[in-house]
Image 1 (cartoon, rainbow, N blue to C red):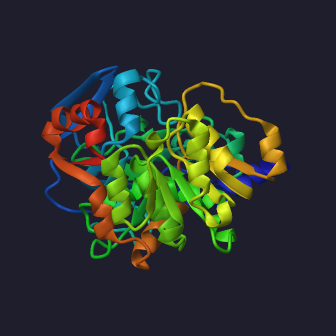
Image 2: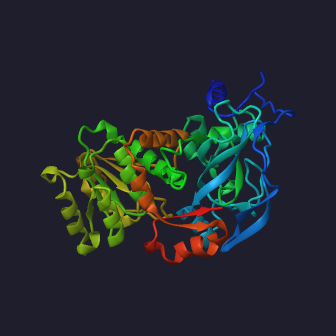
Image 3: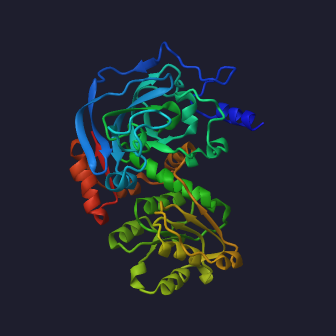
Length: 423
């Protein structure tokens, strides 16, 4: 029965999964490409990953080709530098660990990095849906999961992890990302992805020079959805940490129609607090109070009747911010972790959770639906592109991306929010 359930789930997956009666993948050997634009070169520039502190800018990387009838080739417009890219450079290989990816069998060394990207479709495979054609502006949901394994490796449907079997593929046990070990990413002139991973957008609504930020916005949007904030009649929310994801969480809450007056950002850096205030939210400087208990007391006093927040989002990820999240929640409140933690324990007193009937949850990455909802929020005017543009600290040509992008961000982390690279 479980086998039948998995097969049915895979068949209902909105991607390029085509089964024969024996549940084997059917590959097409003719007419792989349906449409393409002219003047696509044979080689391109890219930033490639080779290991710890080993990034290389190249100008002779072969332009990827359509290999599967559901492939889409994209000409990259912009690609953001994510904290994950910095961790791979400084502490990696992490996602890049191992010689080849177990799903794609592609060599990890020499892959172009970058997963926060936007671009224009220039070529599509023969089985790509008609609405997705050359000239379409798209963003990319960068997940690589067990569901991709089904058509890339012709595995049996039951050879998927429990998370993917339950439809939670963003928590796949073999999760990788385009640009982080799964396949080539967006710090290049071109990349190829499967059509189920692309989301169209209107450049008149979301300008190309900020569309790459849909990816971190989708991370924040998933976290807010996990918290079920829309079930609260009048939510009062606290965001801990004003980095890129913390600031994006402001927009995710706006997308859920939370009143900006009921959003508080706790952040020690003055420049980031000022930026958040320009979005209409209230801010709090935790460093004004050396004592943690006093910080918590002052935060709670920012809520109606000193009742505590209905929703708290930890976008920082340490034992102090975790404690603040738990202690500032009101009765029935929901605390959501969006941060990627190191492998360290935290103190948690369950009586605090029980007496206040708290809900503690977490958020991992995103799904395609999060991208679609972010695009919809732009279209409905819930997210202002002019405000989102303030998150972009500078734009750097790809050829200068290592020195003036990645290394500059590492050495001046407090100076920048988001750096975008462009060809």
